[in-house]
Length: 84
Image 1: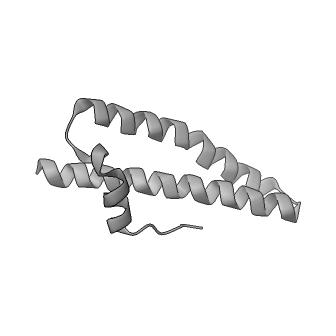
Image 2 (image 1 turned 135 degrees about the vertical axis):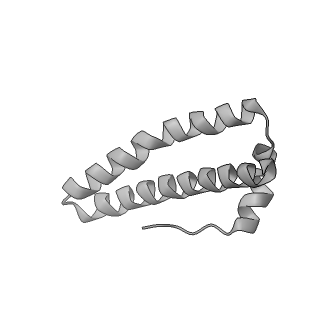
């Protein structure tokens, strides 16, 4: 269910977050905290869901949340590269 995002589009659209400021680190942490319940609860709902239409909608929610999580991980890795 992983949706791939190219590194170039991540870099282009979110490059402002890759600087080394403490503020951006806090922002990334806050975004991660907001995504966690979406990823977890959508996955739980998918496991229990028996309605096909609802299941497709939950898959979209879960997929988008995983994609956003992957983008945050990419930003963090870009920050790590810049600081090393």
